[in-house]
Length: 320
Length: 320
Image 1 (cartoon, rainbow over the protein chains, first blue to last red):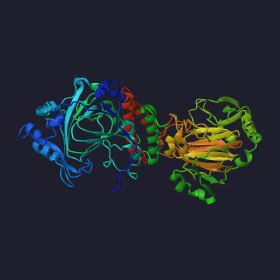
Image 2 (cartoon, one colour):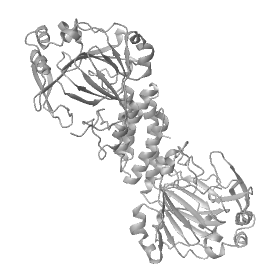
Image 3 (tube, rainbow over the protein chains, first blue to last red):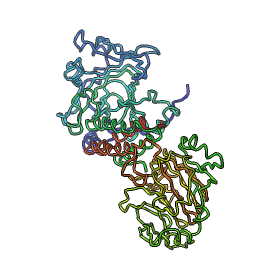
């Protein structure tokens, strides 16, 4: 097999010990990712490594809806996975197995107890039996009142979650297993071929796609290899791609880092665009509609004029 | 003196003789510039070479408002020229003189007889005594009912008119003197640093500006060297830059090549953006206003998302 292609890459800085105290003063304001290593996350890092422990802790008969796939790189467009409801005990056992090619792989992302998905996931209420094993130093990272969700994630080895961005700052606490996180700065948005929903069209992020996605190759990736006890800070709007390098369990904590009124009250997952941005996007549809009747070369020209204006007015470092 | 810098350049095709008949069938629909060479433009090519002839033909005491500059590259931003009203006879004489460094140079662009500039220029009514010397084969290029303006242009040798675009197809009939036209395809709009008015910020188009305008260097220029009897087709929306290589007289004929309702009825110069485009531009201001209160990194990110949508929806060949 050919070696993986090389992309411009920087390592996400790893902060140990006392440095975590700087989180609110310097890490979060920097708007860049960082790994806080060696955090005391509670008993989870020890206990949750055992799927039998997890299976025994949850109520008998409890079920969860999970992604099941035979292809490690999940593709939300081809939908090469299915959603399946299964007993939680089975989820933990199945995910913990080392799989071989073609085996079913599991990915659980807790969506909360509301069957209509209208409430955000909270470890405390969704898995109260497990919640006591997990802790983040209270108040260290954000004001508790700003908490939006704490999401349990369980992955088979090899499962990769497509590149997407969230609209809230979040901490990805790796409790069990290893995970490789690839992140891109928000300025790289146009090199990632994000679709209207904010998901990248590029599923295989380890390969160049010079014909289909030429700009992807130059996007600088920030890479973090997470081990148990690591807490990865994922700033809002940083597209990221997560791959489980071994069976893994994580808790992902989201909070509203900006003015609360900016967030969509119907957002259950922390990934609906900020209200002013969503409104701007809808308004842009009307702008585009104005150009609809024009010949394609005229539409192209005025499209470029509009783009130039957005570059001038919105970008921090507009193309010169 | 260092040789002028080299830019990617193609020659505008020169069509001779019968080929001009193809204009409506192939040249105009191609949306690319072309030079129609050796046209019979009437007596102007012979008579107008003599400034005394021109001076004698216009009514005694007739005046015109002209650009007067000591710097050949006129700069509409620094305003390195002044507007001056002078007798027409003086305009013709002054413009015909070979000038040396620092001499006053003349540029007349007929603006019509309406002092408020609300009507477009028409050679026939503005200079009836000269109009009989000039002809374009009627109906060959466009339906007469679509005629918008026919603009007399008189230039001192060396005068360069800043890069701008017009919203109507036009024919630039070179009657006297030589002129170099540099044109860029509308797709190059973003490489020309057009301001909100559609004029390029780059005045010295013969030099690279890697620090200020890095994208300018890669814009492909279409160059035409005009001689008397040449008619240059300038398609709407093609930014262009015109330099008089000798004292020159030209007639520039504009017509409404698209649905008449698309044009701004208040446009006297043929360069006000098409109504739907102008409306889209105003609406975009409101879109941008939505993002105003957001932190700059958030605004930058969502600005890029909007740009990506415009690329997808408006551009003929969106960046891959």
